[in-house]
Image (cartoon, rainbow, N blue to C red; front, side, top):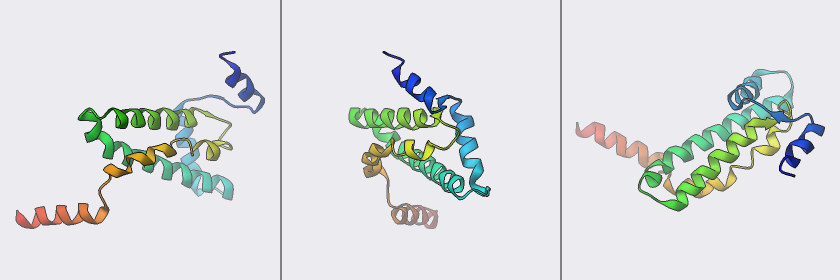
Length: 127
């Protein structure tokens, strides 16, 4: 029973693959002729940016020992990487990319862009 997921995925021609290769394959089709693949490529890049922003924002909280943020961060990483490692040649990727959505709870650590820009510009003007 433990391999039931993979047995079902075999019927859809899905199999475990290299996560980085899967990401590069999906993102690399942004300039292709097929509109569905271009949209999926854009979504793949957008989700990757979302994950990277959330991970960098939560880093300080996780290092301080916040267990909830650690759990959310691990969940985010596990499900994002899993979605990239089990795809059927890119066609099902758009369905899998909603799995890191609970990472939105880490948004509370993201400073607004205006605050970041103003604080960095004020530091530059003081020096």
